[in-house]
Image (cartoon, rainbow, N blue to C red):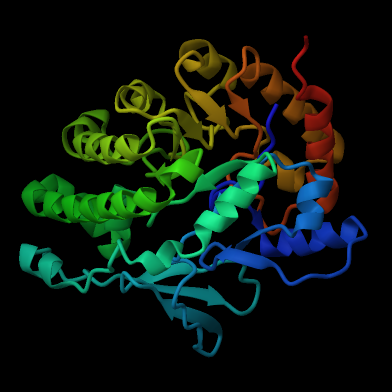
Length: 367
């Protein structure tokens, strides 16, 4: 079955973990090829991709996480402001990724005027995907699945970056009209990106990546009713734009946490692939997910628990976790192996290789 590593910004490996893995494999030191500055994750060099027999290759347009980023020194931290005017900061001591620390729409009351007056990025700037067609065609010739990431984080997640999360969730409850104005603006920019990017690259791409985190470890950030009323119509329109320009490709949708109650909605509006398959969240038991939704969805991820087992378990515990999850998610096809979200900085290389070895043993379909 297919194995993915770093074809997306949510199936990748931390720069720190990658440097440690190269050393463990006896490979010469190389500077990580960072593809998401905020998360500090990278695309492995070709020697590692070949060693691990990775079946996917990612295309990374120039977006807020990898374009025009001016990292500056703030004493005990590094910081930058992205193209959406969001400020991010990473501690110098012990920091492994940047965290949002300042939002451009932080005023007490959100207004339509403030939203309209924000300096919005140009999503259709062709410089964003310049040169990616050649890379896509090379990957295709070499037999890899080609994956194209999108403009930004999800519609709700971007709203919670542009506006402090606590305030925006209150906006949804207290002033839905203005909150929807912000959500609709983000969705519009996303649609314009996909129209332009897929207009140039659509025939060279197999999978496109969209995301929006709705789940927590136990429940959801918004109710299913609110999702269906406010967010689902925006996503349905966005996915229709993608489908029109990618009729034979697949829509990959990333949503963390307990999103079980929304999976039928995702399927209805055109999602083909669900990631990260957050197997330790309430309601996300992998055997039940495969039983209930395996005919309609490809599960991409869920191969090993990245919160507890992968960083803190023994290699044998990692192997056992991989075996359980592959046995649950793989039968009948429709499964791509990856971790539950990115491999973090504290994961020992012994555990990464134990994961990979267990996958190679278990991830083979019979005749």
